[in-house]
Length: 238
Image (tube, rainbow, N blue to C red):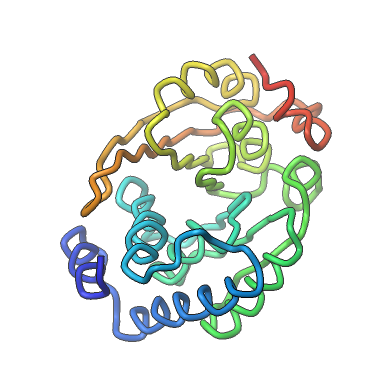
């Protein structure tokens, strides 16, 4: 997907990027590739692939959820900033907090935010399990996103404690979503969530399957969740 296809395909979906926003994506690509030589941020570095598999793929969240209003978004385990930084570029009015367990990625994101001149972005070095217990963050975000971080039963325990009641957890998954949903059903309910819509579609050009799961937070998460770092992964709620 070249830059023009990226712009045109988003415009077709009603997301019209300005020249300045397109320039931000170009700078994002250049910065990502430059820093990737020093640290492992992504295995995908070919320009057309970054535009498709990172930038466009991240923004697909906004094709299935209303990003036109201002809200607070927390992105768990965003790595090099996906999906939240492409969403922030496309929808500058959202406030973004990224939590990631690797400090070098936080260093990259701080630098990226400066060169892209992003406002209302916060980068926090922490494990999701401990971050989800902290006052000021627990149950305080309108939307929490995660893309390809862990299987859904684990991810729900990392993300749902951060979502305020009435807010949403948006899980972005590749092809194994049906099996993951079945295995995560109990965890979602225990953590106070309710699975709403599941959108299945193909990423353009390469036609690979993608799934976006919208989970609504209906009740408070019990105080004992999230459990200690590493525990959700070893012993998922089943």
